[in-house]
Image (cartoon, rainbow, N blue to C red; front, top):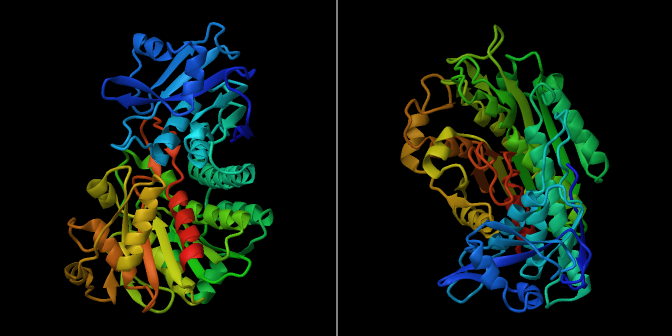
Length: 498
């Protein structure tokens, strides 16, 4: 995608020669209320802007976009008022409100050459992220180009802070939004073009521009080193599996963080085949791998003082005469054996190979993310990720996810479910054989392969990583880029606090 060009401005929105001016509104107790920097624009309307907005039915509710002709009161021909929703009791506005409003209005500005927004005066970083992500469009396979996203957005700076600090905020927020957009691009690429080998090759190309180390293990190397889970899942496809390792070593790194992401480039369910309805969304089953790859590239761009390594096991889960079967026993990397009861529970099999290998490098933290279970969607819906793992770190990751607007909720790993994974013939089975607590049972399975004493977290994003409905806020249809912003926040927190 082509992101808008962003620039901080000290020009008066009233007299700036742009296509449109964007202001924020709030949902007050007695009707629509102007937000922050919109007061200057109100003066150009001789104090009558609220009356005009009320007349056309504006309420200030979240993501409402009202477009008005300025009739010469501003230099710009159009005024867009976007709703932020209800303020807090103390009148404050959250970053997420600004982020969502900026995304909603960015979608309404398609085709515009240049606009100026006052939402950035409320929260600069959130406005940048919302604008870039709301402008996102995946058009690679479109023969008709359609309207382009807004080309340039002038950002009214907050009253507090220095120009240098504002520039740094814009740089960091833009980098984060671009990492999310890269993840969306990868998820949205169809599986006939994104399969293990081509995915690995694309990652290697991306790594060249960001100064990170890359290693790709093909099927021969995987077989030689004993990655039985990745090989087992990938054996049914003519497109052979891969394991990609990306490493960034930051200046004066004090902590090592391993990221592991599920890279099933398409999931039919294998021999335990999925129903046809909705199977096309399984092109998104590599969202976890895309997220950890983008996060390492982001860490390099922002020069986090950490050593961050992404492990992305990649396979295509297909039914064929060569496919692994229910009843097979796989020997995983490290030697533990798994009885396969359901070949559609394949993600956990490739993940634990990568998790065991990642632990050999001695990380201080391990974070794994995956579109792992339909049970996550049943339990938490399409927009809230389930977070499991070491109790304190699990809670920390979930809280940081919520703070950046990627809803996340800490979930338990009940010991009583472990017995349901007992196998008749192997060390452990890959599913319980019943439907109760499926998201938690998958987390328990992963826990069996976590090195003793290693602080870890598992983020199940089966629902949040892909939006099959209409756009909302800064989230477009298709790949969402979740949980890149959560991972970025966790890395920044580790860098600051250990």
